[in-house]
Structures are given as structure tokens and as C-alpha cells.
Image (cartoon, rainbow, N blue to C red; front, side, top):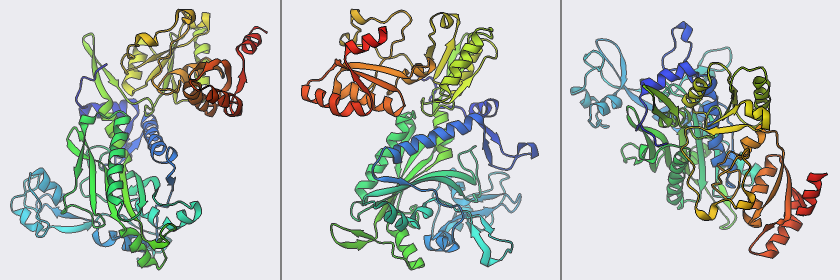
Length: 549
């Protein structure tokens, strides 16, 4: 199905947000607290799945990455060394009439003018308060770090800050990670965690808040290779958003001008998303050079250089930093998935989230609350929930339940009906993903092995039979934990499927004379040395005999 909306209306997202349990206003029973939000039952699952997809992509699927979870509270000198105490400021102006406060650079941007960095007061000659039209006071620099105190005494000696970014926790642990993991350049350290910024003008729902989560990577490289790695990471991170469902036309790259680079940056690109209010940053990829490691080495007196065994020299690595806002990412995936379809005289909302991000992966729906159907559906649900994020729903008619799942982005619905009781089959309906591609004549099923009327057909998209298909969900729903594999080629389809199925804890039987490969020696090697580690290798005659016994 082709999407019909270029992007979602923010009011529609806000309506679904509370009604379906994605996001709630924080402290709502007390009137709420400005720009603070709580993720509800569906929102927390969507957010968790975005985290898992990011972590899988940048850590688990790579050999050059490790993870870290650093503390929110850090030694005060960390922020002196990093430059945050001196430089982490925004220009603040206050209306002389209504006393509202605004970021001067945001007012200038909204007015379509460039802020004079050397003399920001000049901008006030043509700007007025956007709320009441009053005169704006002189600008002053406002530090965005939240201040608190550690211990029972509130004095300067006990003063600490809530971290404004997660990056510094990585830099101060650089030597610890190198010494404990023996990683060689280039390598990276990834982290997901809370950060806090006392924003002057937060807003746009969860886009800009004072408490938020970051997904950050510090990738350490040999000086002189940083530009190459910067471009690699820009393309990699852009591709990740597209892979998980954001339309390419709603993303763009913007390189920072020299006058807007952060104090630590040599170069920087923003991945921007076309939000309903306009283009805005989703993730930044910056070349931080060796600024942070040098600063922390100088202020701490510790050696944070890297010993290069090839050149037998020590130096400070350069750093490329992909830094994304988790909350912004969640919002962008949600907005981009929103769609509407005609449903008679009404409109049906369909959320086309990627199946790995959807808050509910599988909904189990008995056709009705019949005394026989409900126990069967609950049994299916119990089997599926061990492997997927699931939801059981038997309230109201089946049509309304399908519409509810459409609205929250559920990719699969398993319907248990009276035919299911007869043939012990359950059928999944792929939601909001369009029709499968038409098969070529060479891919048609041979007449000798045509499926029975009750057998489902799985359309493969990759060599691995599980990748991008309903196979795992359908097997789990039917309680099947043993697979008999045969096919062509032994070194392709069979090998990749065995690896996946073994990791998913299936019991495997590979039919030795039911498989073939272009290279007979490769086939024999796999059957004799590789497959026996994860599967039972048997002949077709052995399998038939076992099935008939």
C-alpha cells in the first residue's frame, strides 16, 4: 500500500498519543510540568525497540565497537576540562513587558535573519517579543547545565552538574576501555543514556525537552583518517534511518558553517528530518579531533594517548562522533509511519512502523469470545509472548480490533477462528506492509510439492529463510520447535538458515541427500564438519522412517 500523506499532522499524533498510551504529559494530575513527558505502555516499547535496533546496528553487528554505561553525575572538573563551564551557553533575552524569556538565535532564525555573533545586541533593533510585541532586554549568555549538590551541605565544594551530554563519560573512560578490551584503532565506544539541558525555550512535543536520552558514539581513529571516517559514518547513520522506515525524501544532510561549529568541532553534518514545523536536527555527526582527550589529559594529569604498535609511537586519537537524540528519533519514526486510508465514509489511521520498531509485534485475536476459541487463542498468545512483544485482544468486534492494531502499528495479527480448531492452524495477516512482490516463473512451486490447502506459503526475501518473513512467528504460534531442512544450495540457503535457527533455539535436522551445492566438496565439508555442531545430519530415508514410526 502506498502511503497517502507526505507527513503527519502534529495534532493527530498528539490525539493518538494519550488515547492509545504512547506519551502522557508528566505530572498531569498536578497540571503538568512544562515540556516534560512520560512514555506510556506503547511508547516505552517503541522507544525500547528503537534503542535495540540502534544497539544492534552500531555495537552487536560490528567488530570494532564496544558499549559503555557511564554515570550521570561526574567530577566537576570534567565539565571544566570539556569546556562546558565556559562555552555551553545560549544567548538569552527577556521581554521588558511580559517577562517571557527567549533564545535570541531562535528569534533571529524565525525572523529569517542571521544573528551577528560579534554584536548580538544589533539584532534587537529589528526583533520584538513574539508573545506581546514588547521590547526585548539586552542579551546575556545563559549556561544550560543543571546544577545540584552532592551530600547534605549545599556549598561550592559539593556542587555537581547533571550531565549535558553522554560523550564525556566515554572520554574519561578511554584508557579503561583500551586496557580492558585491547581494542586497536579504529574502534568506537557507544552509549545510550539520559542527558539534561536547561533549555530556555523547549517545545514541539518530545523534540526539545530539558530531560532527554542520547544515542552517542565516540569513534577513535588515527589522525589524518578522520575525514574519511566522518563521511563513512554520515552515510552509515543516514542509511540506518532509511532502513528502519523513514522515507529518504524526508531526510537531508546539512553541513555546518564555520560560524556555527561547536568549540570542539573541526567539521559537522546534521541529519535533518522534515518535521511538521520544518527541517530540524535528528542526529549530528561531528569531527571532534583530539580536543577532548587532550583536555582531559591536561586537566587530570593522566596519560590518555594511544600506543600505535605499527609505528611504535604514542598520539592522541582523533574522534568522529555520531550523536542522535533518542526521543527525536522515536518521534520521527512515529511521524513518518503515520498514514490514513479511506474506510467507507470515514478514515482509517494506519501506522506503518517497521516491524522491528513496532510497540506490538504480534496481536492475537480470537474471532469472538466463544468458549472454545478463547482458550485456543490464549494458548497461542502464551507461546508467542516468549519470543515477541505481543498483545491479546478480544474486546469488541474483529473489525474494530484490526483497526486498533492498524492505528498503533502492529505488523502481524494472528486470528484464531473455528477453522483453526479443526486443522490446528493459525493464520497471520501482515498489516500495512503492502502486497508481496510477484514471483518470477523460475520461482514458482513445482507441482510435485504444491502446498496443501491449510499450509501457509512463506515468501523469502534473502538467502536466510527467516530474514524479513513471517516464518519464526508462524512456527512459534503453532508450537513447532523442530525443523527439517533441505534445499539448494547447501552453502547458501541451508547454511544461513541453520545459523539463524540454531541461535533461535530450534531443534534442527538437515537432510544430507536432500541438499545440493555447486561444489560437492563444500557440500561434504558442511555435512561432515559444520552442521553437526548445530544440527542432526540424516538421510531422507532416516527422516521418513522416523516420521512413520
